[in-house]
Length: 218
Image (cartoon, rainbow, N blue to C red; front, side, top):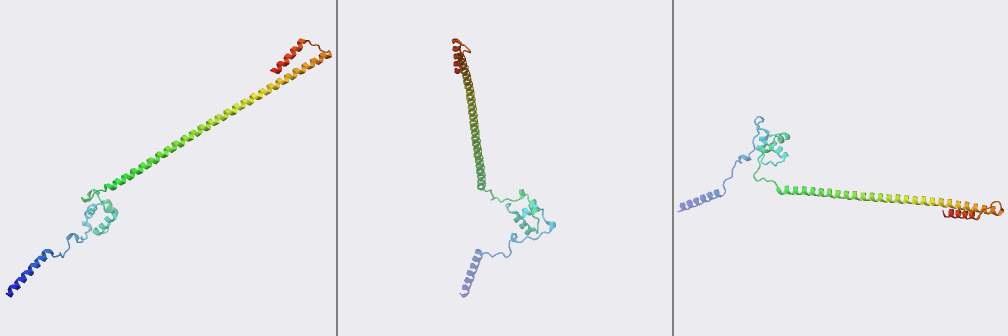
């Protein structure tokens, strides 16, 4: 019976060991092939530049600095310009999950359109202000021209009036002189008549009086 109990214990332990192995498989002692460092290739066995970069790149959005660093780690020192110039964008692999950020593109377009609308609005306001300023200047120039023409007309009319008044004064002075001369002649004729030197008739005296009156009236 003791031997039977030992066999049962051994069977139970073997069953537990199999159950543990099913739950926790033994870990691999050697790393996967993709995690192992790639051996350095000889210069004569290197692929063309575009192929080497394509085989090393997984995403096309890597920066140029990352391309250079990855290339140097895999193939030794490489020239940055040769790597970048040798990359053919059409040959690069694009992950299926990659998609452009349309929201960002929409925001950029909206911001650009807003800037264009603001610039157009400022230009329109500036043109409107310039047109208003030009109209004000034209109205001011027209008003100054009318004022100048009115001033010249007033000065001309004033000069004409002064000239007319001066002419009338000269004519009045000439008329007074003629009256004085006629009165003096009449007075002299009367004195000479009383002295007996000159005798004039009543008709001549009347004629002289009319002449004096006409001169005074003129």
